[in-house]
Length: 363
Ligand SMILES: NC(=O)c1ccc[n+]([C@@H]2O[C@H](COP(=O)([O-])OP(=O)(O)OC[C@H]3O[C@@H](n4cnc5c(N)ncnc54)[C@H](O)[C@@H]3O)[C@@H](O)[C@H]2O)c1
Ligand SMILES: [Zn+2]
Ligand SMILES: [Zn+2]
Image (tube, rainbow, N blue to C red; front, top):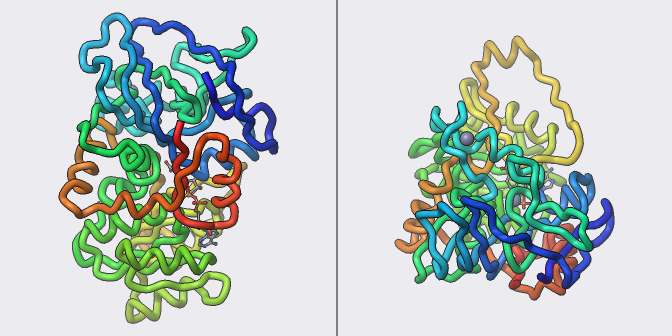
């Protein structure tokens, strides 16, 4: 198949035409990918590495082509969203209802199935499936739990952005933080993930949604998704701005949707006593954050992590698509550019420059 391959850290992706896809094993399905969104996590891996060579891309939708022995809930022709986290349903975390941190799913994020195999190869050598999907290729092999059936009325490019950005950002608000009506919220970073946090805060009924991003175009765009106030962090102190906008109290919730320890620290400082900071962005390498223990304890501050919106995709994807169908979640407006696979590196150039919000490539 054709696929965009990362062969070496720091190199652009190379579109090749000779990636082999192995026959299905029991319990697996093969999906013909229609569209795949570009996420900053792909860009991070392009700079930091992992199992190589790899077909990245984890925000994809397509149509089931073939199902393996024992697959009962999917059939050829089904439109599906590919889930980066395919919950096993049986591990310690899954049975607690914490499917986003499922043991097998965590292994799959690194590029192989939980049994250590990869369905992809090239010239007889293994090729890995990036972040549990491998959506920058024409075909994806996943487990039955890794594909969520969606209605045939949902355009597949619109569905694709739910796979990572929307599921993560909206879920960070509704599932991880559980923001309540009337709350005040700060969102730092306004790419696909941050804009989805803004939409989640709007859905939750937040009274004030303060956004921060050095890119003016993105601050302006955030207003369309529900932001009430915008600050330029290269010009204004975000913590002070939050204090002013909340009458000296501080915000109830802060979200880091850019990915740096400094922003987690800013979130802790910008939230009120008892407030909650959620880390959604993930930077490369081992960034560290120093917290004043006494201040944290006596302030009853909360600091939470969030993986793909703390959700089970089999519950979350239908819920998000219903919100879209009823006009309460804007998915079309998040897709600022559609490109053929051959232009994938230009799409990542746009991401580096903060142009648009989300690029979707067509396979
Ligand atoms: N936790 C998860 O499950 C999960 C899922 C998807 C993505 N992510 C991570 O979320 C982050 C965002 O992803 P994306 O695809 O939206 O990225 P993106 O590159 O499209 O957007 C990031 C935005 O952050 C802004 N930014 C940079 N520094 C900032 C600062 N100091 N203050 C405010 N804004 C700042 C950038 O200008 C940019 O607009 C990435 O770190 C990505 O790896 C995490
Ligand atoms: Zn992602
Ligand atoms: Zn599990």
